[in-house]
Length: 140
Length: 187
Image (cartoon, rainbow over all chains, first blue to last red; front, side):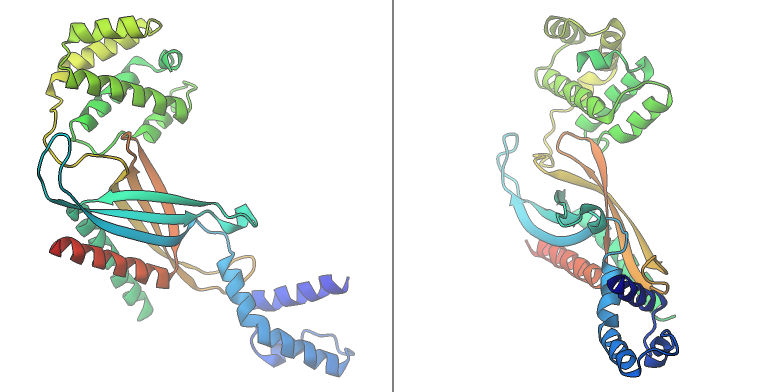
């Protein structure tokens, strides 16, 4: 019962985003033991931002990008063409499925993709636009 | 797969064959199996995407082998008949018709593009969002970038892969791509 009550208290603090001691202190009932109340508040305050970050990291979401590896190759020949010099890009994305669904065994899948110079430029353009949007939002 | 092919209505089968031939001709980046499967299912036919993918692969192999060996329509139908005796008549008709119209046009391509051992990147769609609130945090204000990559796998089938990135991850993502682009320039 004690653990459950503490759990509810901390979840409430994180949910409401309480960061000031006074807000947490007034959650306790009036005749609560003074020193215990201060000690609990102090401990909660120390941990609240860690808990908040954890809550953000484990909220429901689409699969997350966990790693990105790439390599640039030059194709020099094939069974149909004896000599050529075509640069091409190989990209490997490691994507982890929603952590909440997988529990302790997150499923990571790898997606390997080839890009030519043209497709890479198109992609860069798209990414540049995201970056511009981000700066526009950040300045608001 | 031959018995599943009899489930597909004639006009959908024709569309599938045409997409396969256009893909072999490098006119389209891949075959939209998922979208086609959904439309077939909506028309009332009970077929799953795995079966449709197998059928697409088989037909693709059939057409590309026929192109490499320069088979005429009659030769193709004869080979079909001897190999796969259980193909329904309407399927043979469709294959014969599509090959007749468009098969000869499959260029045994000189282009370096396609030693396709990995997926080919087709398209990228993105979204910038802010998670305002969740069941654990009433006031989140957590920005994130969602990206959907459309990829044609080595057999030509198109799939989508979606994922999320935090803002620092996105900045790193962008930086990696700029590096790749500059290496491609100088190579």
